[in-house]
Length: 100
Length: 269
Image (cartoon, rainbow over all chains, first blue to last red; front, side):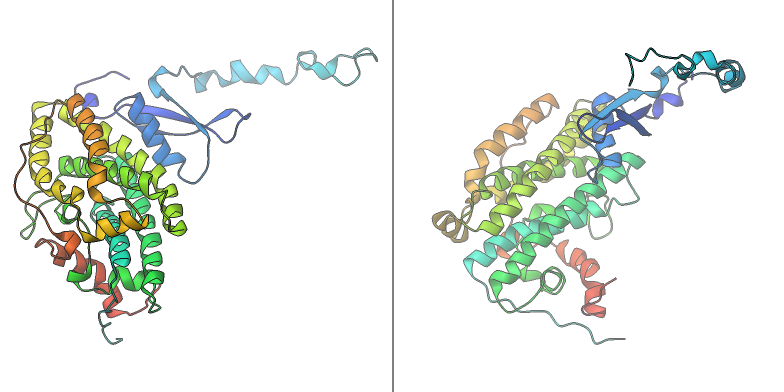
């Protein structure tokens, strides 16, 4: 998105990731507007973790995320299903490996 | 319609008044912050201000429930919050002043007043809770132990705003200076010592207000320096909310707070 004069009067958008407890991954839980990273962390705490939802927060500028194009969905994701050899279950493991 | 509720009459002791000073300060500050609900400058900050109001209301509720027990006539925290006469509230006058906006009966008040007052009070409450968590009254110590974490966060959140606006544009810096000039005279009351303070300190109930001043001053000045702000000169004015003598704004706050409980005594929803 281009940073036009009008866009700059609004705080940029941040994506918020919350870790529910130690050992688990940070999970994306939503987004918010904030002027900078420090404010984004504080406001993430206000908006997303006031009810004991988490033990750790990450925020990242939404504009720093590179996303796949929905128009590329067929090309990127469909071909996987019909190629059974792409899945580990296609291969017979030696008995010695057993519970891999 | 039900009969209008009468005011309750409390049997005051120095201990009760000490607890009410803190509980009422949290209560009225919460009420002022809650005026921002739905009016915040951004959705996220609106939620933040309302969350802080709820933290303070929770602290007020715990303290008023405890005060009701100390008082001994069987009142509950709702009756203490909503059915006293103005002269029987003992909050700092600072928390009564207009915060969100001015009106015909309350000049002054904007977002700069809000973040500044929130910062000054969070710093004061943090110093108070820290000492109060060693109270000989175990219930008071428990309330303080929980509240100190909330106050630390309020101080950080509001302090960041003070720096952001004070060290911001010419407009925001000017508004912060005006807010500081408005609030500063009312902080003298935060550090007075009277008989109630001395009794509390002597019995181990809690700190006297003057013992909070050193840590408060150093923390506040550190943030003001980062915000390119300086404390205005001292004035001889001393406010008297903790004695039950309030500013002209208090009656309007109480009218708004009390109207439901007065019209529907004991109402719950």
